[in-house]
Image (tube, rainbow, N blue to C red; front, side, top):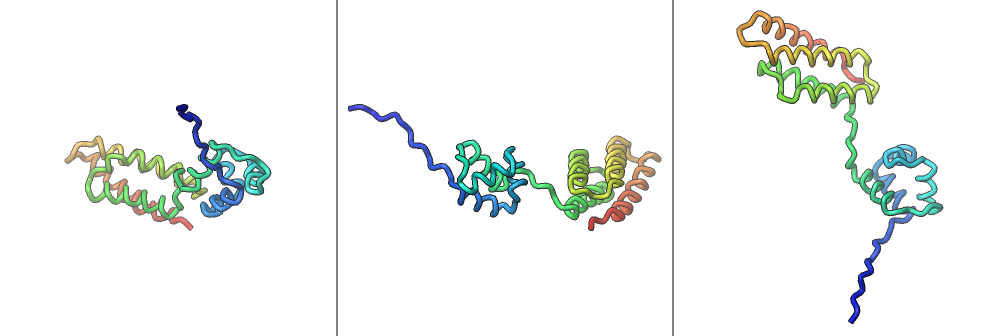
Length: 163
């Protein structure tokens, strides 16, 4: 008796399914193509059935459609995240352990969403102030000044209210 070692190839999605995935993800052909490193034209040909869809491209399309790529938060969400970091530091007296990462991500997302360019400088200043709070010993005059600056930053952040 001979064993069949051939494998069953899964069905590759067709153009109709590719279009459904793209539309369900809310992306244009250009954005969907950019997310998987192909052109808008290629996405169009795939959706019309004019181009063969290989397994790698299918998996990339499914990956993007399922929302596994990091989403850039809206300006309002970024604003709230920074306000939360500043509030935690002001209330607790110590910044959250990951404040530098949070503020760095907030600055990158703010730029990606084309928020106010002045906010980038502000976020760098906030990061530096929180860093000083982190290393300044209690009952130190410098720490009082850092808290004063932190309160000013907290109030100033609301001037960057997103549209």
